[in-house]
Image (cartoon, rainbow, N blue to C red):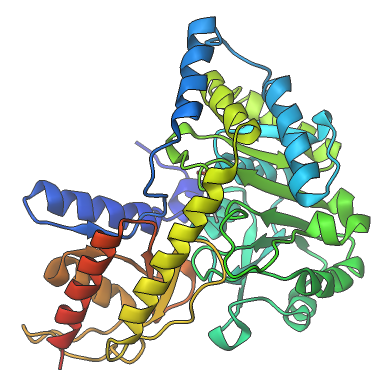
Length: 399
Ligand SMILES: Cc1ncc(COP(=O)(O)O)c(C=O)c1O
């Protein structure tokens, strides 16, 4: 069968690939601690499951409006006002099959060939590939550790061209955990005001996982004058432990939301009716669980940070948000394994840790930042402790 050039240009998601490799090894009888895939350890809270069940029993099993039910869009509108002080009317909101589909919809609905999308690196694995599938050109901007993995106003100014259509901002960031303060966003907004051809996509999916009292901020909130150029993307996957339900939401200017809805109407139609009923319960139900989970994530972050920084050759800056450690492994590159092979790149270290330690991580190169390992700490304390023991023992065997 002929496979299109469009699909030929895209890679398989590195995270998905690594998680599958770990599953294959498990099926072959090996014990693997899987810290590659990024999802909460918890199950979806029971009141959310009950709401979905009741919705199905009530007969909410049919197509809904393409952009999502009025009830859910209304709840999203209230959420944006309550948490972010942004006013989005119902016609400025779209519900999608995960935040990922909304990013896809937005890029496919706006990019023409030769259009550029600025992506600060390290970035979420899927951004460059979605841009390529949409016929755009990803323009990667390196944001090193000494910049706390964030794009500066100066970098942004230098990178914008007449062809730039979007700046993709992800805060808290997967994989680095970087969180942009309101002042940092204001500095970027200052640059963006001079370049009206550039829209801003804020992927706020980790909004509820911000440590140490850092206040979450998003562009449409801190720069209301840019409102018509901002798409704010969020969802229930990470905050409410609902990755499998596939519900994301976005707020933006009505013309963009309409174009995204038109595209969605010709692809998946509406997101799952039952998933929408569950997301409605998540957004309108009790929120105290989120703080309990945050406390737990914080203690897991600190536990793993203590252990990893004690291992010769590995180092990290504890993340300000999300649930990943982005571990520098440059000192280990070039070392020799007990069977004599050389670890020439971060991907080799990942292979070594998967096969020798039985721990699944993702190489930084998948996120545009070679020399790093991403570890998801949204797991149980016992798994994390065991994983750190195994990593320490395996690294101790290198020469
Ligand atoms: C930064 C980022 N954006 C978007 C998504 C996709 O979220 P959803 O499950 O809502 O499609 C993920 C999932 O890993 C993510 O890490």
